[in-house]
Length: 221
Ligand SMILES: [Zn+2]
Image 1: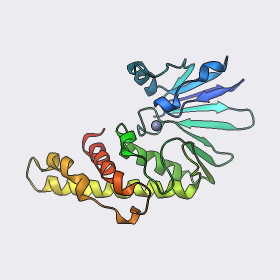
Image 2: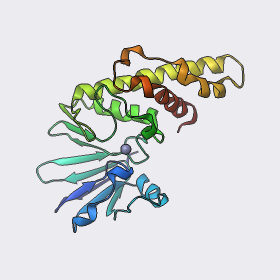
Image 3: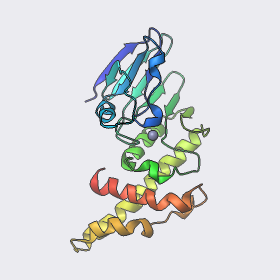
């Protein structure tokens, strides 16, 4: 069952997209603003000696609505993904979805930035955005604002997860008890997805994506 909350935007509302360093901070200059964060992020912020601790005035679990008067902004936490508190926004009336750091157009992020990303969760988030059938997909990281880029990246994660899961199925079926764990070390060099070899950074970072997906599939993390 979903936990739903709501607030009416009387002045300015700032929802954080997630808890990463480059997405936090600066809100203190907006006196009286509502600062919104998915509740998982609150514990993470306390753990970092570097991150500024924003004063969060509103936290939520699954869904939070911000009523702008003429339109309602839905804030959704669909899964852990890029961090533990990813929040995507949807304005149903305008058929717009908004996400941050979740994808780029035919380009892979350096995998060092994805060490805390659960790619199974990222797949859940991107596939949900696709299922909402948006007319516009705004990407708060780069200039790759297109529904097509969103769809391509959802498909990329679906295919990557399927390939990784298939290799684990084989490892478990081999009846060699150590095979699934050993696979974690070898799978980055075993899987290729030539269809995406033209994507920027594929050659250098794709093995890191395979490793991260393997850990997400095998370890849930
Ligand atoms: Zn991020």
